[in-house]
Image (cartoon, one colour):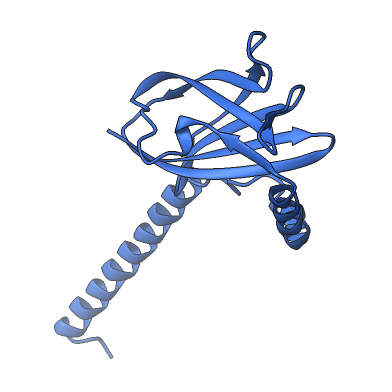
Amino acid sequence: MALHKSMKLAFVWIGIAFVALIAATVVTIRYASEGYTGPIEKGYYEKGLNYEKSILEQRKMIAEGYSYESKLFTATPELKKGKNQISIQFKKSGTPISGAKLQILIERSATDEWNRSLSLSEDSKNHGTYVGTVEIPEEGLWILSLQGEIEGRVLQKTAEIRIQ
């Protein structure tokens, strides 16, 4: 018994739809695989395990008088697109701290394409003042994370800055 002409046409359209669905799935998987960047945060698991300990250490250092002073942490940080000279003072109870290691991570949310890390060096003329050059390639909202290490202890500060 042969199939009616309309039934044959229906099977052809179902076959075409099935091939189109498979093709769309293959294209989607290919694009998803090409754009995958992996975890943005390095050591995220270890940071998660030590999260409470880190928060307590931050609070303890702030209570002991550790702080940062910089125009970066004001309402108008005066940063622009391109290269920017920055200066940060690391202090304990108002006294500049010499010999610390300061590092800035500049990043944008939702992507790691623009992530940059910069180590600041201590100004030889002004002890406790750390300087460096941050390059901001685009306008928009940026996240600056400052991390200062002294005697094995780390103080972190994060700021969102809009570049126009």
